[in-house]
Image 1 (spheres, rainbow, N blue to C red):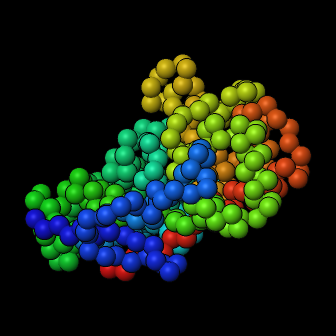
Image 2: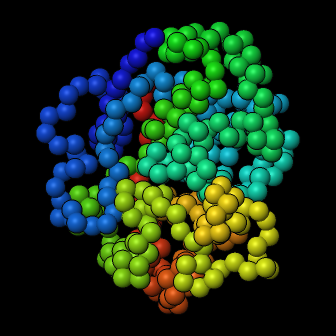
Length: 330
């Protein structure tokens, strides 16, 4: 079994793969800056990856053979060149069947502490297994998927080179997980600001960030992913759900996993890293605009009715969180 690890670097606005080597001194992401005490941390500029597993995972992520009728792939709902989403309220799976929750972005998902809105998957590999056999997503049977991949000489060779167990659900999803490790949007204007470049964001974006902290948004949206690291009840300050708008089992949130009453309407806090580009919002895709989503969050999560200007300033801040994803050269 061969492995080939490399380090992904950000250089001159792009990414390239270089041979793994000892890193002397500090990682660029940890370089002291003017804003080291902020509750939001920049996305690391470099990380080690297994280049061959990444390449295989890239192919599998876009491979329709993983679906029951060879028509859909992971990338059908998670469009990499569109910030990892399809901008649909709910996505369409096999035979055009509609999903029941909004498909979250896969960008920067490696920084989430759990996966899915209800946190039922502990990591990206576990998450990748779910859609393959879900009857309204990819609608496949693992045995059939393995047979199809074994019939493709390039896949058979790649798995043989990389895994002792060749093609299995675990090796397929391990490769996909390695690819998803690389789906990071780095060097956003706000990350440049955190690293000490005060001119990287506008005065409006700075005002928005101050409001974001002042109102308490940062209590849930912080860390590297500006979210994705805790659970929170939808309607923490003012009840959001009632008999009229609790329309499906999915509205119950993490309760579906734990069956604990205290987890009713509790969801994983989503990342805001590319939220400016991933409308519609919330677990059910019910909110069409970022402006509306901010107003709802301010009122129901924080107990604030904010002004239009405050909303615009916070929107501007959220826009500054979006970095660039540039596929590394193989």
